[in-house]
Amino acid sequence: MKWIAVGVGALVLGALLGTALPVSAQSAPEIPLVIEKNRFQPDVIKVKAGQSFVLVITNKDKGPEELDMQQPRIEKVIPGGKTVRLKMPALKPGKYPFVGEYHSETAKATIIAE
Amino acid sequence: MGAAFVVTLREAFEASLILGIVYGYLEKVGARDGYRYVTWGGTVGLLLSVVMGIAVTFLSGPLLDLGPDIITVVVIFAAVGLLTWHAWWMQQHARLMKGQVQHRIDEARAGNRLWIVGLIAFTGVFREGAETVLFLWGIMAQAEGAAGWSSVIGGVAGVVAAAAIGWAIFHGGRHISLSRFFAITTAFIMLLAAGLFATGVGRLQGLGVLPLSDPVWNTSWILSDKSVAGGFLSGLIGYRSQPTVPELCVYVAYILVMGIVLFGRRTPAGIPLADPTQP
Image (tube, rainbow over all chains, first blue to last red; front, side, top):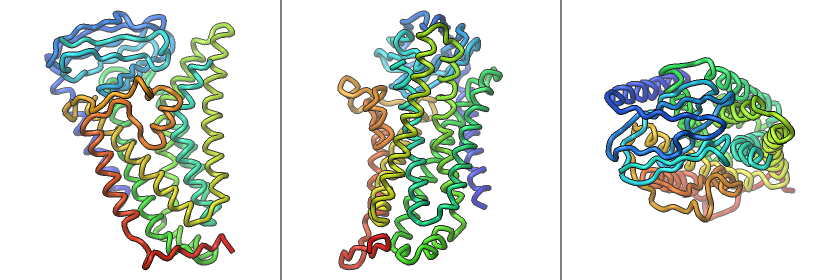
């Protein structure tokens, strides 16, 4: 019984996450972001405040990178040679810095919502 | 080397803290044969971390875009549930575990709950495991020349250092009384679970499932989450340099509710529990 309850709970949560996100992702603008030589390009990304968007992140390096933003709390692994679509929530005007956790000395960038 | 050391030490710290506590718990209640549940849980967590690390490099499309996030969030909330259960159970049974060793083992087995300890070990290792595996894999893939390999050494040393801390907790736990061990670890688990709960809520905000909100304060200029000290505090008490209102609310609410449930009831007239480990 416990296992069934845990399984059902996981499925419900998964279904919630799975359905909630792609629906609202439609029509959101796509913004490309490239990881190359352990750096983000561009390292300043300007977006419209109050509108959700999709970061289309392509990792051109061999190794994986993890995009790590403190606020809002986002952690996203981008394996080497892969492209990940990261849906971003609508941001208030402001600066939102993030790093590549695996190469935080070089991989630094900021999203500016205005 | 230093940077890699910090990353893996921080990632592996929480897992080793949890392993130290659950191994210590089994040792304390005299159920050493239950170690295998924890060992299995930790091993399966590690293997699945490697599998997930490999899997994400083969996945693409929506599975890669959302799959890891969903798994992470489910594991976080599962860990909160399991840790809560464990803390509640320890508190409920602490006063019953006064008898002989065999009596304590029977108690620990009551309700077939040793496998829960194994599950706790699993979620503890698996939660940050895949990230640590990917990180180590990444620096190995890019290791060229002395600097690259020194990063690899730093990364491995970070995991070893974290494991040493877990072992120290386990070893230290052996020298304190059973009731004190239960009280201290229950408090630790409560803080750890509250921090995890807040992390889970924060992740849901980042995923857009819950609405965003501004941080209540920002102490990242004093103590960054990414520093060694910040990482330790994050694992121990759920420290956040920029907590949002929902994160702070669930953290405080969890501690208030669990604090009352776990520590609110005192033994009659405040008589300390008899402790079988002390003559």
